Image (cartoon, rainbow, N blue to C red; front, side, top):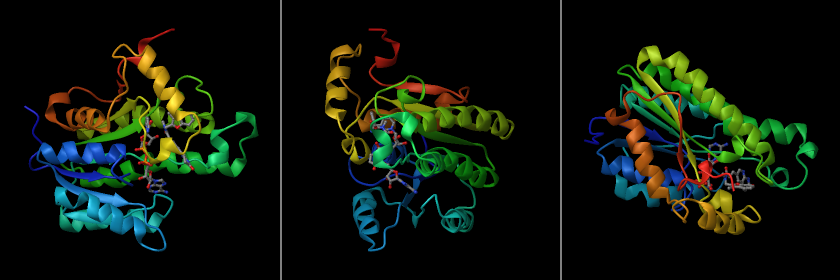
Length: 258
Ligand code: NAD
Ligand code: 0WE
């Protein structure tokens, strides 16, 4: 059965109690995993305090700042894992960012810097974190990232994030191909729209959610905990034959043509 005891899991992307990464961390904890949590530090340390209070019940044995735009923070995160844990089994990549002005209006007007930022934070970070995790996954491992249908179809206003997710999904395949011989599996969960800090900042997200509630086979949206359950599955031996895949956790929305 689903059992992650003895597994060391690094979870990125928790900002608050609505984060998808929070749903994932709770389900990995429930399955018995030992957790390390990273957060995006700010100048005043507000995020550190907020996330620390939130995750306290999950007893993380590591709690570290990790801005993926900062090479040194990534280095020291994995250095600490090497010293404290010795090996890593699970990496959850659950972060994305594009500048707000690039998530509305004409895609053709995306600035060079906006394009670069979105792909650096949302796409390259998976490659970078996986490369850092590789030498620590000495007993095999599982890497899971979060993607969205807007990386496969043109969804209004998703714009540069769609390009970033297309790159992310292809990165999953190349990483799976490279890391498979070391028994490291790499998969993505394509989640349906969920109200989180990132999505709530997007105009029209409620209309999109209502559309999914009308059209998706299950006639509802999905929850962070449902995504967390799928992630726990992809991190466990129950999915030992699965790598390089995009698993839709979207109440079935993706299959519909109308
Ligand atoms: P969220 O705002 O809770 O999470 C986004 C996280 O990215 C935050 O924790 C933030 O701190 C982190 N982040 C941003 N820039 C960073 C940086 N430079 N370094 C480190 N961390 C950084 O929102 P969410 O909706 O839970 O998003 C998590 C993932 O799920 C993203 O990849 C998103 O694209 C994906 N996703 C979201 C939805 C949705 O509808 N909410 C649907 C499908 C996929
Ligand atoms: O991947 C996402 C959210 C990504 C995101 C959201 C923001 C808003 C705040 C990345 N960067 C930022 N930057 C900000 O300043 N989702 C899948 C949720 C989402 O975002 C959309 C969606 C959906 C769904 C944007 C446009 C249209 C639909």
